[in-house]
Picture 1 (cartoon, rainbow, N blue to C red):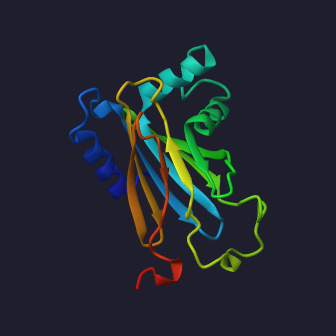
Picture 2: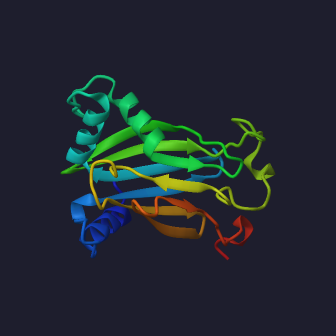
Length: 191
């Protein structure tokens, strides 16, 4: 289910003034939140279903239907690995793991996770609280190029949250990548 806040922000982003080359249909919205215990990002990505199907079809060289095409989950996972890229502070680029999708009228929401485990800590650190007191996002780079190969003027709005820290990023053809620099240390959150 799409959270009310996400639906509101999606609508707000779609109706907000856009660059001359874009229109509301050329905007995607992603919510990215940190699950510190699992050391992963949980991502909800909303976009026009017809645009997503067109993009997957071009990549596959055949017509892709989100509801009927066999193996569509692997296609989505592969697409996200190329177009929604997270680079950890140590240079690791973990692959997204598809968790599901939800149809919402003309839009589709895709859910996936991305591991925050670094090369030094391995895939499963023994205890998240053994992590340094800083943020899990410090120095992480996020690049959202979803649908940019299809729509000229595509604008991707990404809301990133870790505890009380929250940022809204806008990824465009000219500004695809952002380095995250959380300003609130975990022990100070909620104070």
